[in-house]
Length: 506
Ligand code: GLU
Ligand code: ZN
Image 1 (cartoon, rainbow, N blue to C red):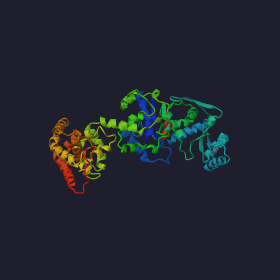
Image 2 (cartoon, helix red, strand yellow):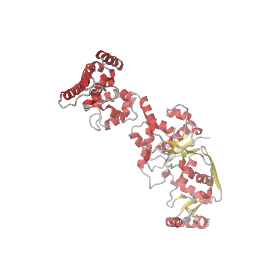
Image 3 (tube, helix red, strand yellow):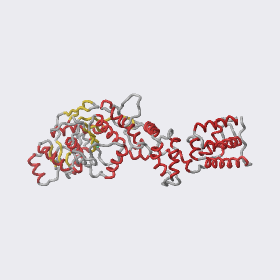
Image 4 (cartoon, rainbow, N blue to C red):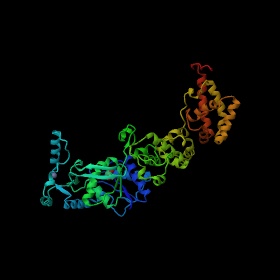
């Protein structure tokens, strides 16, 4: 059997994590079976359609690096892959069901349907949906009325008093009483547009879809789909309803939990590899003890029996960990290119939106090793590197004072450190370390106490990216100017008569 599956989004919103998970699992399943993965746009709901959402779909999957084998933009043997371009087809198939007495014309007005709903509500009736009023109109009469132009919908004639069964690849045997299925749902609306159910089944059949992998929220529609396939006399595809994706509180993942649209993740500085890797684990397990997978590795390992029945919890912290891992795997050039847009918009190179000079661009790349090990998000990279591109504010004097020392001692330490600035700016990490260690020993001070005021003077903060690398990128002249600026401020303060007494050295 040819394995063919599909992602069939309705472009009525931005692509979100749930959709990406569905698409990714279909992609991986097709790849793992040497099958084909198809994109089909289910744009039958014209009131909620927006071309911007179609663009967002294309942008999202281009960014994620997930490609379909057949689709609206790629073409393929079953084109068109956009339902709004296939409306004639659905009309034809709906008429065929009426001719086979598997569906019927319903002439009820929207007002009448609303009326029944209201009456039942007032009577607290347990019944809901359509009352099957037109099911008993004799077919000949119904056909005449329809031909005469009387407005109508086409409804599926659900066989009553029976049960519908199918096997879900993950959930096993599913059995549903037909009487519990929405009573005779509309297949074709009065404007001639199909509903989701009709278009989805016709297309899955015509496009040779062998497996339907979709979110579990579609499970209640499946008995209806099985009935519809039978009405046509078609074999239905295999169904596999994927585990739900929940937030940490066990509720369905939503905006309350954090970003859900891929756009948001992208803006927040997530890498596509991290998102793919993490989403691939939402409801599936691959190899014990292995966390990091490329798309190829996932495709090689994916199978339906690796799916979990239990709902998947979307853990933002875990995703953050993945993002950090993928940031560390980038080369300096790659990472600089990825982080550059964030740096530009954050104004790292002077003012917001200002592009870097060639020299700044170069420093930015050279600075990547200083942040690579610590950043979890791309936007953190410019945040950590601000001091390399503009003069940091001079911190308050106490920031320079190591534990158990006083201002005078801090001045002395910084003065000693100053002598190292030029040689360390020209040395690699190892040599710089040798230099500063020797100096600390000579001066009889602790290494940490010697480094601390120097770090604060150079980077503007006690916690910063590595000092040696920072010195190299800044160069001796700029670094010395910062130390001198700090020394001037500290000396002024120590000469001030209003200075509170230094704490005694214990
Ligand atoms: N158009 C439906 C959606 O928006 C497709 C559901 C299915 O996969 O059958 O998810
Ligand atoms: Zn009716």
